Length: 79
Image (cartoon, rainbow, N blue to C red; front, side, top):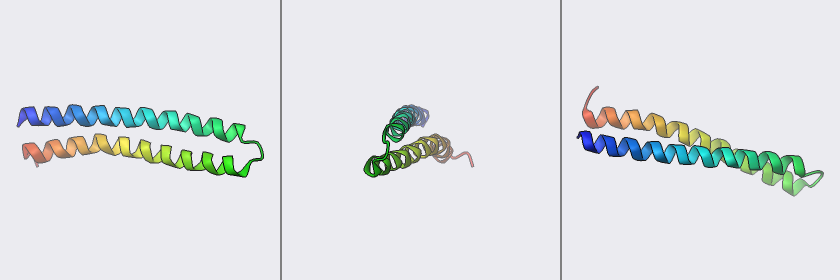
């Protein structure tokens, strides 16, 4: 069981970190889009949707770290 939890822990940590970094890059991209949009309504709409997806990505990354400890508890049966 220790090897399985270690593999799951490392994999989820790596995935969560990757998702978090991509979400932060998307957040910066949305900010640049929004500032450069000017009066273009379509670019404003695109910037808002990118911002929404970036926030969802950050939330998913945070939840992935929570799932890691939850799965560790379930696998090791430490209730």
